[in-house]
Length: 263
Image 1 (cartoon, rainbow, N blue to C red):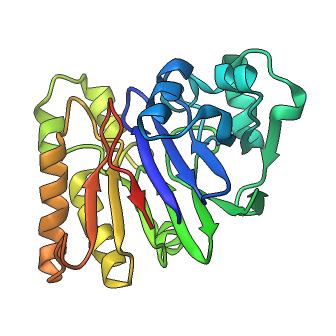
Image 2 (image 1 turned 60 degrees about the vertical axis):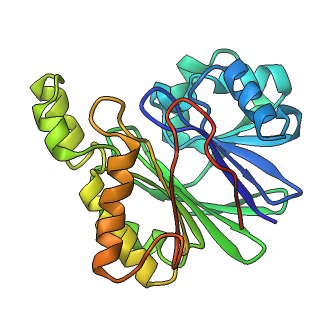
C-alpha cells in the first residue's frame, strides 16, 4: 500500500512523506530536523526508516532541515546539479556519500520507488517537481509553480495522486499588506499558482482520470484552507465532478501534519 502524507506545506516550510511500504522518502525538508522527526512519529513513522531526502529547489522553506537530518541520521540527499550548486552553502558539511546528483527528466531509483523529476516554472536555479512510480501507480508532487504550461500538464496527467500548489487568492494578494514588488513576484510567471488556476488544472486532471488531490503550499497571508478548497470544488462542479463522490480532495496544512492518504 502506498502512503502519502504532508508533514508541512507552505511558505514557512515544506516536507512530504511518501512510502511504498518497503521504502520511505521525504520530499523536501524545509523545517527543523526536530520538527520533522516529531511529525513522523505523529503518523506512526520513524526518521530511521527514511531512505532519502529529495529536494525540489534550494529555497529555505524546502531545505532548512535537510543538512541536519542527513548528518544526524546518515540520509542521502538527492537533487539536480544546479540545485546542489545553489543550496550547498546552506546545508553545512555533508558526507560526500550522501550527496546524490540527479538529472532533470531522467529516472533514478530509491529502493522499489522509481522517480523522475520534471521542470517547474519558478524563480530558483533549477526547480523541479517529481513523479514517483510505485506498484504501477504514479504519485506526483508539484508546488512553487509560476504558471501552467502544456509540458507541465503532460507530467501531471495520468497520475493517481497529485499534491498541487494552491498558493493564493488573487484578490487577497492584491489587497493585502505585501509590498508591490513581492505581490508582482508571486503573481508572475515564475512565482506561485493561484486558487483559480489550480481549480482549472485539477478539473482537467480529474476529467482525465486522477482520483486523489491534495492542495499544498497555501499562503498564510493570502489564502486560507476553506477558500482554496471551495475554489477548486467550484471548478470541479462545472465539470460535474464532486469531492467525496467522484474524487478525493483535501488541503495540506502549513504548520501541522495533514491526513494520511493510502492508495
